[in-house]
Length: 490
Image (cartoon, rainbow, N blue to C red; front, side, top):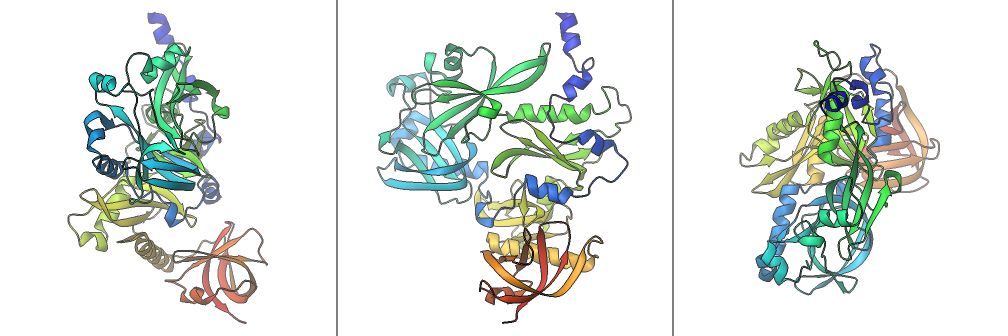
């Protein structure tokens, strides 16, 4: 046993432990190379994290979501005496279904790539479990983008909910024990509840195997349990149902990231050469896939990042981006120090989450007071001085873009771009997102041009498909091209 334990450790099997985290690109070469391999990293970022509109941004934090869930739970005293709110799980959802809430009201819910928190009602103890017949009658939905959308769901498509397989159930109905009784004896980790596009609740378990003797935990599959009838089905990672976003446990993922970059030059690395440390993991969405994001800082440098990693929360495959910038803590401090936020000493800045906003790597954080959202803040990943805050997302975003444009005026434009002034172009398509106007021109296939009404007011009156416009811009390698000036000529 002693020999096996030693041989399973990372001091003996260093490379095996380091490569437990599967990567889609050669991050070792990118980190250790003395050459600048940051070329096209912005394009890779846009491929990995698709741009998000303001409406789809996650503004409700887990803490605020729990407060909202407790408020709707409090409307039904009978439930509050028997049940408690379980763990909240974040997921994306596409689908539509009819629900009945705890007050007997009927609603039709429709989602398209929306983000929601879901939590089951758990039993308050053994005697409550017996009194209720071992059945939980509801789960709670809290929108992650709209704090006014909260529902306690007691029936779906006319069928009352009867969830018998829960963490707080007893005997053969306790979830983990039920999975064991269903024939799955390997190591498992509960990753929470998720609902499908028809509103049916399932609980997800990660199936974990040791890859290196008695150690080297790695997720090799998923076990999905129907929380009403108890059916448990095992899937390989690449066969997990589409509606399931998260299989990889967050704690295990962070452990794998830590080992991957801590052992970059072996177990003994007295000088800490090229060693990186992950910051807090966050849940982000890219190309409709859920990912864990972590900024990576050099050992001894806690203020800025040397790059970041995205790990697919379903498959566990990571992608490294060699891009310098600030970490989440500095972004939160910058938003807190912004002139708008500073006017209200009682306001607090929530956890910053990274987004792709118009091709810009941006941290977004809700601003709260007493766990109520009272404002919004944005901060550039690459420049701590580019910040915007305001009462609404639109106001904060406009302030952020103004700050960004002012910083461009103070610095030279990238040398790899080409200035093209007075180009006569034909409008193929126009799409408005708040104060941002996106244009597709017939003369530039595959390129999206954009302008902000705060910077270029003329875009507000350009609304005709097929119109000829004169445009000034700088053409680079990216598919997103900022417009410096635009005017209609016919």
